[in-house]
Length: 154
Image (tube, rainbow, N blue to C red; front, top):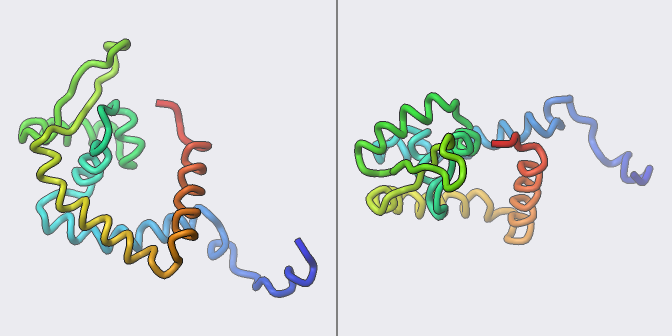
């Protein structure tokens, strides 16, 4: 780093400059804003995350669903039982590994979550708008790459 530039960068307390802490705080703040909308629609946060994750995918394993939704697998399995009973999701066997349970959203599930997805996109736009389209997309690309590099197999 250039010495002149280094003099201009303020020295911050550790947590104020530590990526995991910054990501956690940012996630909590912007997620909490939208969670009120999800709960008002009658969904738990994890149910919303499951339906949103399954949208646009042909199927996802239960283990991968737990990773993406940042939930414990037994919790996801219990919620999938309830959601399957309501007709929002369906489980099926993996093509080549019968030990893996796959899940996909049903047309009824897609219908029930469509309005929330639209509202989530609007919320995301309000959050990112101050940064401009290029910076917002660069941030998302960087975050996807971090996730890809540090994701556990499954």
